Length: 526
Image 1 (cartoon, rainbow, N blue to C red):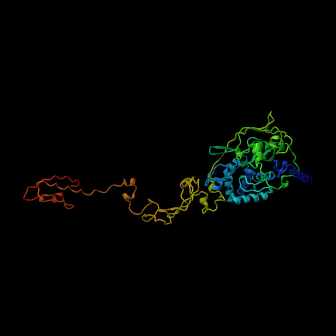
Image 2 (image 1 turned 90 degrees about the horizontal axis):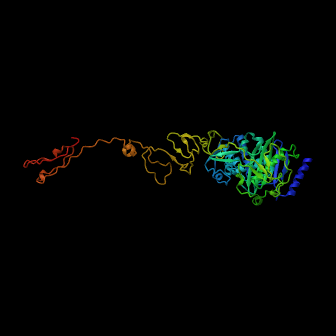
Image 3 (image 1 turned 120 degrees about the vertical axis):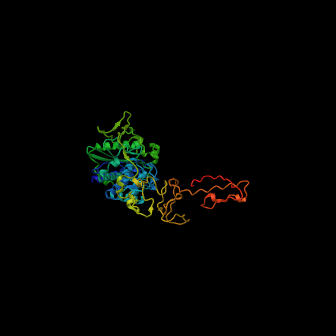
């Protein structure tokens, strides 16, 4: 009876506040689902990149069911590579393991990688989006409708603080061993070190992640978890006017929740759905918060501070969040109130970035295939294994994927780029004499310079090889013609010798006249 009255009062309060200026927030106990504080928790809202929580949930569920592995290599499609930033600029045809993809997606909030995960798990984006909506319905996320897996703004994509809290509970309860995907402080991709977009990570004591989101229509969103004294809380803030505001607001809500031992008397699952459609707060963000369309990945490593005297009733937020009593900061809180009245959250703690990279890992060869490559003809080749080449059989090009190691390395080459061979091309060594390929004739391409049958000769070899062949013996030199004397008659003229006879027999001296002396060049073969 009390719970129903509280629920009715809550819904009535939503109607009084109205959507035009209302923010939305919620704090619950992660173990019991008990609501500790709530503001418009069922108000439909654009999720922005908090959408990626569902993308990660479905990926981990597929891992649990054996449909994909953490070392599964997922190829990026042109659609994934073309997603707007925030992104890490993966190229179409490049591969990335699911493990590295999840780390980058949850830390960097990369839109291109979210599409890679969706295609690797669902085969294609429409199929994956259907899976997202089916899972949301199963979990009881009654205010939620997904259109894409990365949260890029679409007027029909919406959630609520209630539904995001339910999804956060499911992630924490079902996949506690994978919490490092959403609480990693930073990753290193090549030379670039990327900090977590959640400003509480590395700053708030006991923080456990989870995910941020921003598009102009939604404002700055965050789902944050923290653990202190054996209790774990989940805080949701939607519609803050800046990244600093959402971080400070979430820290204040968590501090206030840890100061309470009793809840409001009802659970997050009992909150009714409000219905309706999400509205845009882009005007407020641009006018009051100074937000920019790509600010979700912008966060400094130094301290951050905001003009916030309580949990939200300060004038600077335009009355977006209902006024609540000031939190009693415990000794473990990292929130500091400056003499000016501003609330400060200290600099990030120094951490060692987790290395991530594109490409395969040693375990990719034996991992399950990604859903977007299972249609291949050879699953072993699709995993990156070397194909078996039968003697005298044509060898099809394009079988080896990127990042294949060893002898069959083909890094960075595709069928259509970087000098790759089209997948339909075959090559072989002919067994008959080489002839020109007839114009317009199909079939295998005859390669120039192929090995031909028969004995090798100097003309059939390369110049360098021909130089190594001993030349044949030279034939006998031909004798020089006898130069006739000016006084000699026709009878004394030299006659061309017959083949293979001595030169002296070529002409007979006349008996009537003295013999004319001739000079002959010595023959080398004499």
